[in-house]
Image 1: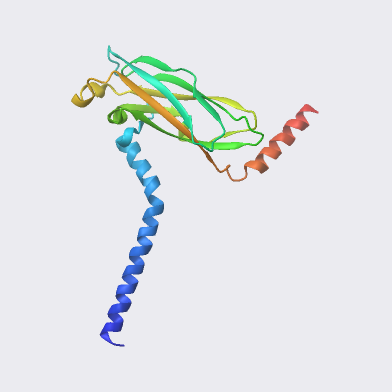
Image 2: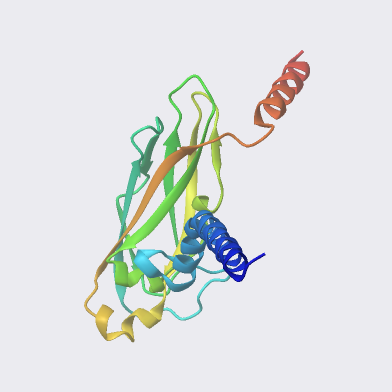
Amino acid sequence: MSDTTGSNRRTGVTLLGVAACMVALSFAAVPLYRIFCQITGFGGTPLRASVVNEVILDETITVTFDASTESDMPWVFKPAQKNMEIPIGETGLAFYTAHNPTDRPIAGTAVFNVTPFKIGPYFVKIDCFCFNEQVLKPGESVDMPVTFYVDPEIRDDRSTKEVKGITLSYTFYETDLPEGYHTAQIARDASDGAQVN
């Protein structure tokens, strides 16, 4: 085998490896970007915490709640309250309502952000319906809570000192039903029917 043939083969294997890596990275890009946003608050993505904040300022901020659905998502989705004035650092509880007006079960996942985007690192969610996929049966309605606080450090950042209001926005889009959902639902319906009889 000549040196040229061996060199061409190595180049081909290298290019094939690069192409495979690019394909793998393209599949990983969305979840990696989501994780990056959740860690840094980039793009207005609220941060996530497991404990409540203990420092509460003697200053309030207004949180406005917004809801929408992707064009092919048939749910009716809206905030239960338009806005809330809350002391900075205090834990707030808000609700969104969703209704499935169709004759079929529908699964949905919510994406979210806050505006202005620079507030993302200071808007902290403790618990949220958006952390999990939601499934609504035909005709079902549900109230979905979100527990949050605005980090008092928002007032230590010169770029956010003037912010008096935050908008929390959710958009629901339809996703595939969980694996085995239909089988589990049939079993539940049969169990409910047996109890009635």
